Length: 312
Image (tube, rainbow, N blue to C red):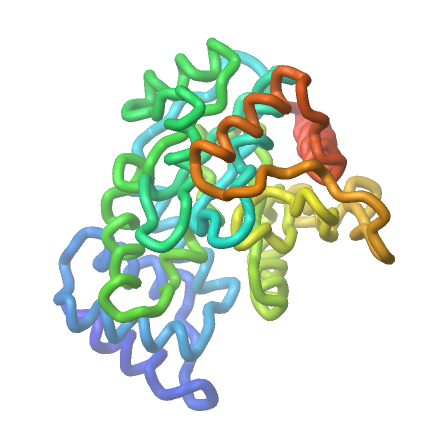
């Protein structure tokens, strides 16, 4: 079955394009993820959506289709889960997603990180995990074992959802990100009823509006923030704004204002951002030889408070 009819609606340009319903978006991405369309159609879909932008209803359909094709994962033995989608990596600054994950895990919180194993242009979180000696999860049992041992679990996208990984890789052919990258940041691949909070990060202000619309529409529980080079961890130098949503409602009490003004001190970060240097720094922080950056500490506290609010 062709997706040409959908491309005709979304491909009329920024002003002429028409939004899809949730059901249409679900059908469209289901066909893409299942490999039932041609490469040319996938490219047309990616470019059309890049120009038009996604509505909350379209994202709802896209995310539902992706969830249906994710590897079933376990619920933790107790408590809830913090989900950290890691899809950008480090380009100039150390990638400290693993630090946030490790700190939360040492506080007894189950953490699931997912993303690509490698990025040809950046240092991925998977590479930092490997440099730390933390095993990557290849099965649902591996995820459960990591949580039982008090470690964060990392699962690569190709294992979690092969169809989504293929869609993300289209970027390397056409040179642009596509709706798959937004969907990846919104995934919640947990059993129904499992308490959880996901960090939803953005790099450009306009995405904050569309992601807010989605969280309101889907009644999501999340911490929305501007990511550090697109990673779901607070900038260690200056804490960004944390917008907390609990079941689709903004929670002013749990949200945090950004740090403003001139910084008088900076955390002692590693000089390099390669995986080995980053791992040595993270290990030093986790064993107490280096202080935890206040911004990341505040983010961890905020996430645990959200979990407590939703019964995790």
